[in-house]
Image (tube, rainbow, N blue to C red; front, top):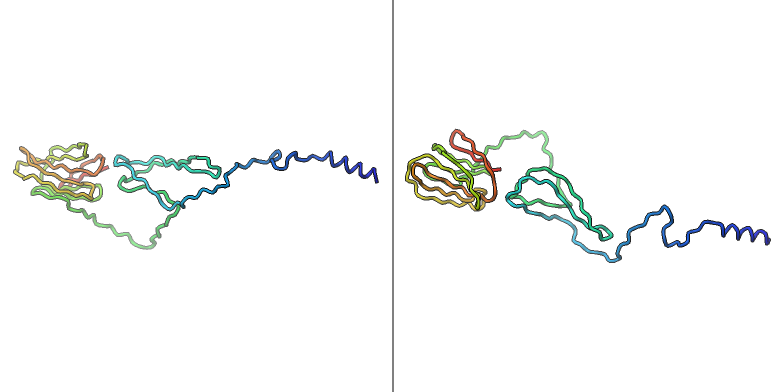
Length: 211
């Protein structure tokens, strides 16, 4: 009996045991310590950011977030997409997918311009970022001025037009001014932000496309 007890005691003291059961042994990973205090935050529904009128292409979106252990990290996504600065950019965790239209013929919509100003020899129409001027007169020069951004257009005609101003506050082409000069009349089209433009001649006048 004494011999059996001695062997059992020897086996017990030779077993490998952890010195402190409250700390991880070799091969186990530490779990970051976190606070017991729960930080309450409103659930993300939707938030937005508005860019300045000079913005044209979005290159990167970076999100800064807080982890469980209160550390702060960032994650980015690279982009290269054109944007319309008039519209805000949203961040959201909810979305809706538009229903796909199947077996339905596509109809071409007629382009419908809105008349924003008119004088005796020229009528000004707008559609989104396109300005159409219906006139029989030739443009002899056009250029862009800043502060505020505005397109200056000179039409060749010897006339006696009275000074004319028309505001379009809710539109991209927010003000049209027309005045008479010696041998030509000038139209100044004020814009709601920073743009470049190109111009092309059409059968009934000219079209200016902002970009």
